[in-house]
Amino acid sequence: MRMYDIINRKKRGEHLSREEIQFMVEGYTKGDIPDYQVSALMMAICFQGMDEEETLHLTLTMKDSGEVLDLSEIEGIKVDKHSTGGVGDKTSLVLAPMVAALGIPVAKMSGRGLGHTGGTIDKLECFPGFSTSLSKEQFCRNVNQIKMAIMGQTANLAPADKKLYSLRDVTATVDQLSLIASSIMSKKLAANADAIVLDVKTGNGAFMKKEEDAFALAKEMVKIGKNAGKQISAVITDMDQPLGNAVGNSLEVKEAILSLNGIGPKDLMDVVYALGTEMVLAAGKAETPKDARDMLVQTIKEKTALDKFAEFVTAQGSDKRFVYQPELLPTGKFSLQVLNTEEGYVSHIQAEEIGLASLALGGGRLTKDSEIDLSVGILLHKKRGEPVHPGEAVATIFANDMEKAKEAYGKIVHAYQIQPEPVAVVHMIKGIVR
Image (cartoon, rainbow, N blue to C red; front, side, top):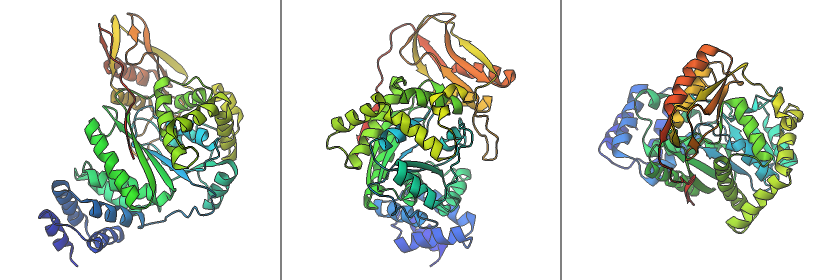
């Protein structure tokens, strides 16, 4: 088998066999096939596409290129949730303890953030002493005992995807549907939960800017999961403005704790309940979406989800007092209010621009080696549809450097768009793919 022939066949739009895909993935991962040949194949795929069978073979081959977690020691139907990423996305911090409080095992593997803000792992490290460096044995034990654990991605999880993505990133071949779907799903399948719920975001702050593209990606990933024998569904959610009011690691953790206390922002909780409903149904804990949602609501009302979060934080090395006294978590030394200059209604908040403001403060990473400041961020006081008056604060910046705060100020002002007429309601949930 020759790489030249594989490139040539895909260039002509022909179907690649499982053996050809395995040859390419395994050869490239080992270093036997050079970058330039794989780049040529990725570009051919961008032009010719991949069918359902090819996409599945690529996903499974990347999954099998490294460690596949053995979670057989965990009792019950193990559920996991994955988000395609957005600004202010702290859903896992609220959702996982709610689902775990219902006795459903949540075995989650998360990563660090690269870009606007930190990932779930960075946010959790706001808790002093918190560790996501768990052995497989400890991970399984925690899930069995308290029904949830979150660990960092192992270096040997789908290494072929890591290498292929790095190449795609510098050869303008990231935005092909089958390649995006197989990249995400190879890692999710390697994490080996029984049921997977995907949060596919759409809007200016998401990877998929157009709603139809988000639905197409959701359908592609659900097909892969189904063909791989997993229980899977996808919820398409709005990311045309930041999710919730807090953007920045420590601020987002505090907002998650507020949400577990029953006073979370409506847009955040709409997404949490939609995803949670899918997780509860997948675990066989409820028969109807209404029953599943009602069960989740009870975990907030009775504070069982809050107590579960405190138990989880303690089990992974921190102290539960930070959950019950979130004011102890780090906050930037300086605060600066962003003032509105117009009369009217907030018609739009560019999520991406708010994310870049957080990045300017030091709340995100430009490179994987960048230091992240967990204490900085932005609190939005006005969201889409709300009335605003001249001189009123639309946001507050929390910073440790006033020069960085001033840079963020300009980005936030630019992100807000005001119009004189009332704004139509935008629904957070665009649809569900099962």
